Amino acid sequence: MKGSYMVVDLSSSLDALNQIPFVEFSIFENEDDSSEIIFGWTSSNSDFLGADCFVIKDKHVVEYFLSYMRRIESLGVPVSLEEM
Image (cartoon, rainbow, N blue to C red; front, side, top):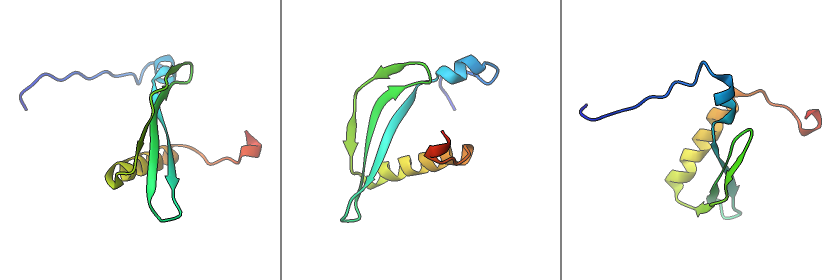
């Protein structure tokens, strides 16, 4: 493919990995079986980086974030709130 691409490899830096910003989101399932997502505020393990929020009901965007959430869940270990 023509073009200019850049890759940043952070795998060797645990400190950098802990500071990577991530987009926070909440998915709401409504009584009428529709879903919506509120997303956009950004934080990291060490900083709060912004407060912009967006509300979207688009089925494709909601499915994207549901898939994203499932991927995050697959990387972790389930714990109860009492254990935290």
